[in-house]
Length: 225
Image 1 (spheres, helix red, strand yellow):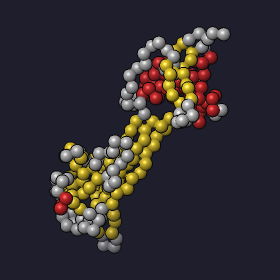
Image 2 (image 1 turned 45 degrees about the vertical axis):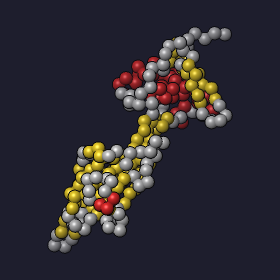
Image 3 (image 1 turned 120 degrees about the vertical axis):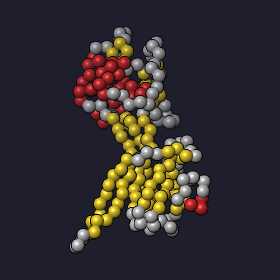
Image 4 (image 1 turned 90 degrees about the horizontal axis):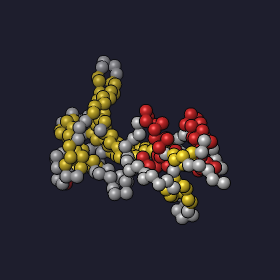
C-alpha cells in the first residue's frame, strides 16, 4: 500500500501544502487487510490499494500462436490486435480527523467475480473491524473513496511480427486451431498437437525468455496437399 500524508508548513507570508509518500505493511485481521495510522489534528491521509488480475500463460501463448490467423480471418492488421494482460482497480481512500488519534483502515477482499466491494473498506478507531460503534463515517471525519480502473494491453511489435511471419513461411503452424462460435462471439482453443500443453500459470513471463516461449507456442508440421 502507498500512503500520502498531507500537512501544512506555516511561514511569515504563506502556507504551503506538502505530501510525503510512505510505504506501509498490512496485517491480516478477520478476512481484511488492516493498516494502523497515527494522525495529528487536522491531518489528512491518503491510502492507495489495488485489485489486479493477470492473463494466464496459456492465453499469452495462444495470442502469439494465433495472431496471424486471427488477423487474416477478421481482415485486420496484426499490430492492431491487443491482449488484456492485466486488469483491475486502484482504490484510493482518504480520511481527515480533528483530534490526534490512531485510526485503522480495513480493506475488504474482492468479490468472487473480481469486482470491488462497495464500499471497498472502512475506517475505524478500533483495531477490530466488527466493532461497529468505532467506525468512522463521513459525518464524523472526511471519509472518501475513489476507484480508478486499471487495464494493460500487450501487442505484437514489428520485430516479433517478423519472427512470426518467418516461422509461418518455413512451415510452422500454431499449436491451437481456432474455431469460432456465434454465441458467445469468442474463439475457442482446440489442440492439434499430440504434445501435452504446458500447465497454466498466472506468473508474468520474463522478457529474457520470450524467444523460448514464442517457439514453444509453435509446432512444426509438414503441409500436405
